[in-house]
Image 1 (cartoon, helix red, strand yellow):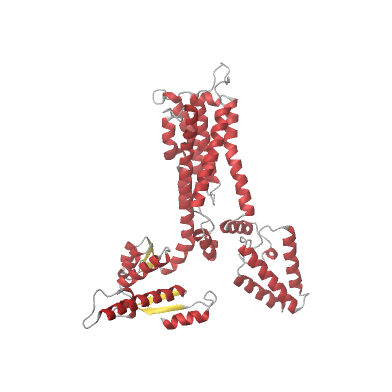
Image 2 (cartoon, rainbow, N blue to C red):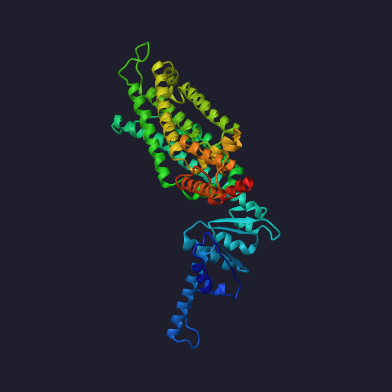
Length: 478
């Protein structure tokens, strides 16, 4: 262990020159001394008190140095370990790093390790299905681990994130609407929404679209995710899809949306003005039905902005939910014995031109505001998965090869920047400049890629990708 630490200190840059460690387990072994016996419980025969304390101190120091060396390594391979040793390694890594630990095993001796990990994956093979039964996921071969992590892992994380945020968003909308109504009703027990309509809000009117998104939505295509490991790290470990900040942003959006809907509708349909030809005015149930209808439509259309893919199932269930809502309102409207408060309210509501104008204004105002915010964020502060989707869209449009400079093509640069890069590429392809000057140009390209990658990722231009592309161009020039 001391030699390993000394060698790691001599290397210095472990990212450029990674190291690995292989340790043999079993019992008895050095690994069992480190993991299983952290300290002696009582002195051995013939051991003094000072020797006993020194022995415990040496064991703890050895344990700390071992895990210090393991933390510096790119990978640590522990072979011939007992089931207890495997579980203890996983436990120590969880406690020391605070990371989410994944364990993969294919036999019954891997069962304690799989249960100790945060995520356990069992492989069904020649050693039986004990590991698969103990794990959270089961796969048939080890090669399936790559698509399970980089493809399905990102998809599931994105789906769960959207589902969680949207459920709180749509629940907050109806709750905040009743809260705003309390300022006009003196916070009495008067209900704003019809009881049956309010009951069907979560279980029927807004349930189908989010279920489709939680099952079928795909952030980025499978081919891109399997060939872009950076997408996994950018989408999951950097909190671009779910975090406390994103959660409170959704709650803030619900507050703003409901405020626009409620106050526009409440003041547009005030009870002092005559709304119908027979001299009648809008009642509280008419106003509440308008607010409720707009909330359902905004909640449904708001989810469309978060859908990463559109399939026939997406279209079907979104329109089915939208049409089913209005059909249900018409049914509740014609049952006086079952729902007397809403009897003929919807029919009377749709006969008023003022109501139609209010429905259009209240529905469009929150959605237009969201589209403006989304446009600014996507153009000025894009996330990595947004850039990947843009590249996929460009590839579907058959972009010309000369614009595919590096691994990640240009993302709508400013005109001067685009012209500058095209001029550099033209000079390099025609071999006008001398070799020393060409090396200077290569340095400019690499520096530009590095700066864009650090400032938000206009390119997926890592140094390795840029170096490979530079070598290819040099070979073609030769």
